[in-house]
Length: 126
Image (cartoon, helix red, strand yellow):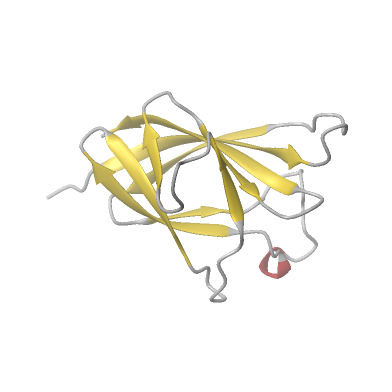
């Protein structure tokens, strides 16, 4: 039996001080199976680390497909860390991030000075 999977559009950019100029944007598309793991880690030219394993800003999410929605629940990365994150639009309570088709959600490194941010959009579920 074939598992359902979500098609996600990821836009990586930078988040800094409010008066900082906007950064470039890297756009990718990925597929994630129901029950699979979505890893958000800078891989392209923006925020390019010398050693990818040394990069500290990474988020891992357990993916659950619920009807026409995709729910992302943060889990520890391969080093056992869960980094602080912000989500826009803000949810009333902390917890899983719910994606609905064509309504982007921004997940960002929630520390002073900013860092990478991803705009995640559910394109569809197959």
